[in-house]
Image (cartoon, rainbow, N blue to C red; front, top):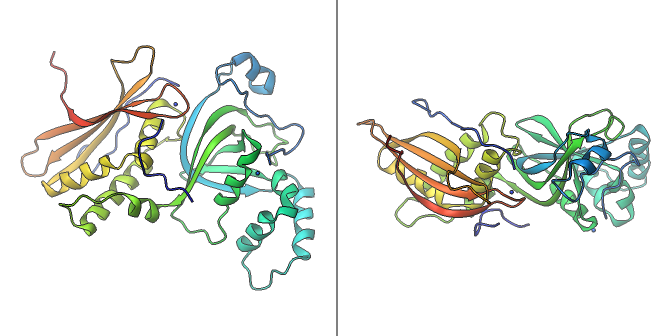
Length: 316
């Protein structure tokens, strides 16, 4: 299973400041029913989206979301068919989740896999219905279906946000559809352990600092990964290890992470750039120093433009 942290890889909407407080300041396609609405291949074709049920003014956008993906039975007939297939399998001693994974992972049951609807929840709220844009990517959904889940399991979905799902697509659930191009499935512990540890910082101290940064960003309100600022932030969390090092180093200097802010870069022109600013406040002197990274969010896959550097507020 591919780990998200690694070399920064290579996403459309206006940015608003995002802050987090520290106590100071702070291999088949999904083909559900014939009525399934899949976002158009062209993410800026509003007319096509309107023809797909999104309304004439609907504009698809990009998504870089972190949450949990779970399968659901879209109709009673699919649930009954699953029960019949399960009755023919040897499932004694397995949990319900293990049975679900075992049945849907078998090649002869791929017709059932194609019938399921897949719901992505962000911060515990049902946020998207996810479908693969490429038929071969159905296997990524199987990887997200863990036989032994735990509360720290996470999935990253990168794709195109389409219109609202019709009521008959997933048993009356009406949330936006996301046609994904890539899914990472991992757990919080595995992500933290995959981050390279700086030589001058003790492993336990670094792990604690990395866990705090990750958890605080995940607790940001309304981070559904559909706006430029949230996509930039989520990209950094899973792909750029230097921000974790910076927080650990700040703790070593007796500084707290007092704020994380995302702004639209003044350098944006033909490309859309977001600046993610980390503010550190000395616990003794209250002196604040800032560092930032610049991320290109023009297209579906964000990528790093400027590495972590000192940030200076503009003098007026």
